[in-house]
Figure 1 (tube, rainbow, N blue to C red):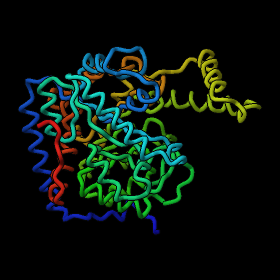
Figure 2: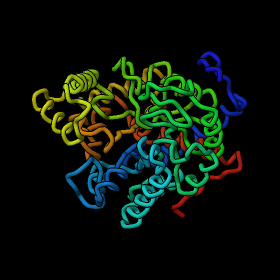
Figure 3: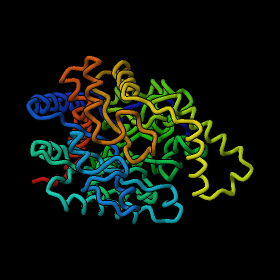
Length: 410
């Protein structure tokens, strides 16, 4: 398959018509924003990995805990409106054939958790998010991190649409049947596979947002060439600050996401936002590799080694200001309409910045944004309205394909 180049980008939908659709959605979003000025900020985090942490550790996130970065009391303290709960399936689940069943079990967990509390509601459409926000109820939306649960079969998308999945990250730590991964040296498709291209079209038609996080640059360019809908990077930061970290987005792709109408949601992990933290992790890996018994070490032995290394070499945690530097950079490259929040809480280990250690600390982020001069309208865009605009655009275009989005909060 010939590799597409970014200079060969061609739209799949009439440009002027698509522009009018997105323009109408933009002004509709402005109206919604204005109508909520008296409410607290609509704060949407596009990526939290609580489901798999709680599932494997049999944890109850409805009560306050000292474990992880998410639970209901801390979410309420932090002012969260809706969180996209990540239905994450690791590459190992693909290897042993359990990706599909694990994904459904994690969705079961999210639904059971929400049904056990009057303070949580499932959000499967933008209207649900606004209803829950107005009622002071935390929304649980669903995003699937890794396309592996589809098992290479695009026809299985419908079952996850029916269960409430509203975005899919095409690949994760390893390349899969649909896309190459930025973490995998093996890039068998030169970007997207034929099945991946088919999946992009199917997701567009069903209003399922395409998440470009974790993809290679080639795969991301190809998504942007093929997609008639705006996309999200649900938990990615900028390569500008960490030049050799290909998991983050380069400036030219940030610009392209803006041109697509999409949103880059900034990952909070220190090693995603700070070059010093990324270099520390590289040196730790080198120290591990230098051990004569590195390949024979058990998981517990590796954990002990990492703890000892960190005791001797304190980790250089980023700060709230470091995270906001990435937000500023997206605004500089595009506009305030194309940046959002994708913390990756419960997904980046003990690397979170000082002042953003868990979901209770979002007020620190808001304070830093205010200190840098962002006004109330701009804050509302960054904290949630930009993501809502993208989600709404996907709903509208899906309806044009004859696939209206199903809401839950009636």
